[in-house]
Length: 77
Image (tube, rainbow, N blue to C red):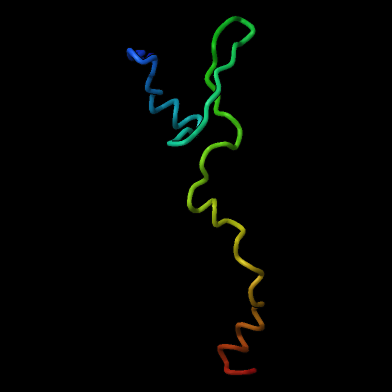
């Protein structure tokens, strides 16, 4: 797989590579030198922007128990 470098030194990461690494808009990547001299593209730590669902994950409180919900629907208070 190859990519062409623009006059500004930019490349487009092929879609297959982005999907495999989970890279999307706002993701941060690192370039690391392997022991054999190759340069390897890796997805950086958790610096990428979380999805709207990830931002909401874990934000709900404990809520009511099943017994409390059943009592509420039966009109018991």
